[in-house]
Structures are given as structure tokens and as C-alpha cells.
Length: 188
Image (cartoon, rainbow, N blue to C red; front, side, top):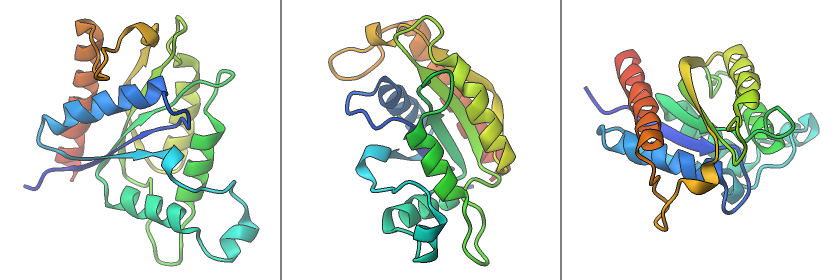
């Protein structure tokens, strides 16, 4: 059986995003299982605000690239920062674009296994926003794992190379990444 294809994505545009750092670590742990993993950074894509008038002129190239990569994936490692108790506008916009289907195409998030992460310097670790992400993804056909991880005090957890330097948190990130790969492999 071939290795599952995993997309790792953080819903932040910030250059030094803690959620991007968490998803990079989740991707590293998923790679250790033998999965094929690709990290996608939203701040490297030119995704306009979703607008049906723009869509009517043709799907923007970076949006199509994102859709194609998601369609080929078996699973998604997804970190969502919490903005005002909810999902970021950047992530919601990317999901809105990717959920749109061209004639005869499969929706990009349909039947994808998703593991949810959040990270914050605060005490709840971005937890409040994860239910919103879960509702959105479940509503568009994703299989969101019951287990999720919100990492509090994240600003204290990385060494200079970007790796988690706290063993308990590293183990939790690793376990959820491995769970995603395991479920995606079984459903592949």
C-alpha cells in the first residue's frame, strides 16, 4: 500500500506564526511515519477574498493550486489560530474557495481526514476557535478526528531551530499527527 499523502496547513498569514510552527512540527512527525507530507503556507498564496464575480471569470491560479493539492491528499493537518473566539479570516477564505467545485470535480475537502491543532500564548491555546473549524469542515464533508490539540503558552515551547523543546507537548503533537496518518492510511 502506498504512503498516504498529507497536507499540512496553518490558518495564519503571520511570518512568525506559532500555528505555522506547530503545523511544521506535526508535519515533521507525520513524515517520520513514512507519509508523504507537503506544508502549504497561506501567506505564500495569492488568494483573493471569495467573490462569485471573481469566480465567474475563472478560478485564480493559486486557488486552483490549493484545490488540486487538497484533492490529491488523503489527510490534512490543520492549525487554526483563534481570532475573537473563532476561525481566522484567511483560513475561512481559503476553505470557502477550496470548497467550490468546478463541473465534474470532487469538492476539495470531501472525505479528507483532518486533525485539528491550535496554538496561542494564552492559557486556552486557541481552543475556542476549534469548534468553529470543526463545524465548517464537517459541514463540507471532511472527517474531522475527535481528538484535537490546543497548545497554550506556545511562545515558550520552541528552540532556535523551530522544534518543540518541551517533551509532553512534543509527544501530544506527534501522537495526533500519527493518528491522522494511521486513519488516512486505513481509509485510503
